[in-house]
Image 1: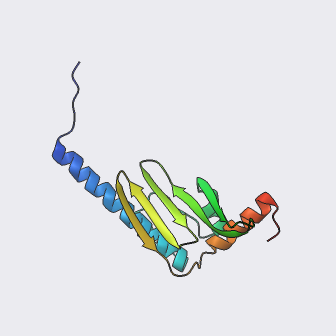
Image 2: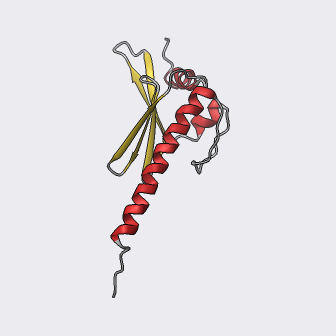
Image 3: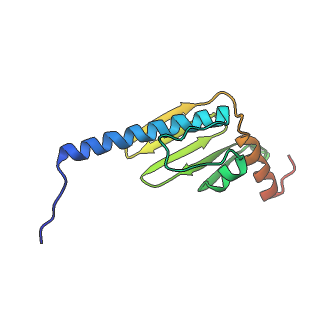
Amino acid sequence: MTITTEPKEQRLERYKAEKNKIRLHCLELSKFIEQREHNWQHIDLKYNQNVNDFILNGYDIRYIIDSEKGYIGSKFLTVCGSKTIWINTLYKEVKGYYKQHEVIFYYDVDNLGLDAALKNKFINSYNFNL
């Protein structure tokens, strides 16, 4: 039985390409949240501009609450696998991971309404009176 591995140069080139892809993906997601417009040149997934469709395509939501069970933000997992991307609405950041590489892009304004939609989902899910 013979095991073949790809040459080190090819692995390095593939790693650089994937690292660049996660950086572009996070940048485009941060722009999408700010501008509600998308130009998915570097993203395999296609999102509708409807925030509820965007949330339905997500994988996980982690709510950030205070000591009185009041909503203050969310961490939303939008891409997972070898590449992982979390959107943190409290810090207004899009954070992507690929292997040991991490990229962070910030957005100024949530024109998509992502935080409001996640807050509404939190209130409806847990019946808290905020």
